Length: 111
Image 1: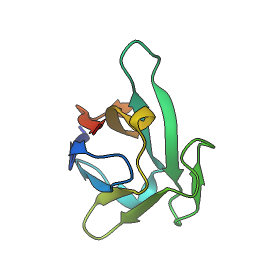
Image 2 (image 1 turned 135 degrees about the vertical axis):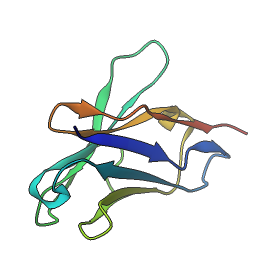
Image 3 (image 1 turned 45 degrees about the horizontal axis):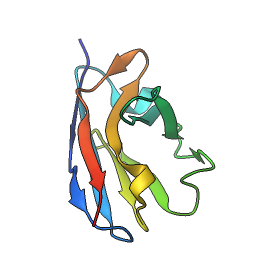
């Protein structure tokens, strides 16, 4: 049974940075594509970024150039470095893998 646990959310001012982390357990981490999603209040959950087993990365247009996804197949972790944050980035961020979701971590961008 795979488990995904996010950490690193918080409150940050516009223009600031945060780094989210997702720790996975329960199966061979390197065999799976990993992704980040987010859900803002009153909106549907949306895809943010994904990373392939070999490390190829893909981003939503809204975050490209500001966010960086990475993974460590030894530590079984995936990170999301978020720079130049905007108020519209405010959301609960979720780690996702092959039908399994983490519990989410809140990111609030506000002055």
